[in-house]
Image (cartoon, rainbow, N blue to C red; front, top):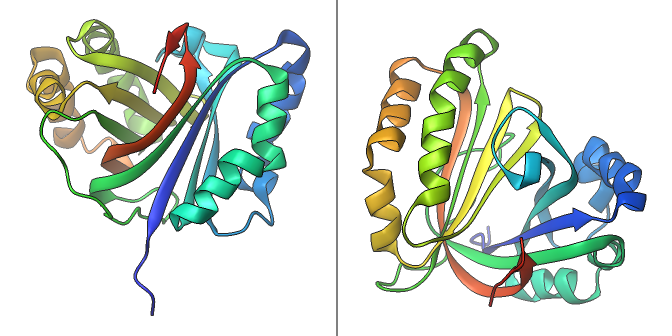
Length: 230
């Protein structure tokens, strides 16, 4: 059996108002929107919080797409020539695309895991993905812990991008963040609000499924909230 060579593509889009219905139809369809895409291992079409943030209030226009491919050539084919990506670009006021390789990976998303295919490097940018399926009876407690941690993330030194994403309101949530270096990310991870949220989550057994992945960016293009990446 061939060893997985997972390459992850994350697309963030701020849709034009005329394309809102189109975008939400794609979120509702999920991975079926990418049916037939060569080399696709799994994919998630995601909504976002207000203004791309983390709260319960959804954004009408900001959305995300995460796709895992078997090999970098197939990921490049998707980024450069896929009609799915081109459709987002045509219908968006702003797009950002990240091509990533995992340096550490724990847990699963919909039963899928992401294989580690890179090594972390000091003083290089790092992307962090955290996602969870929240147990319904723990949702209230989880969301009481969430705002202080999210506020500290938005203000954290060295954080270049932070986006709240989700498959479904309230119960299936994810956070994607881009950091100047591992040192900056580790400093935030040890901070009071975030550390308290982690301890509370594990002590309360909030999650029925979770995933925590750190990535080395291979390529970054476009912009998000007016900040050019790459």
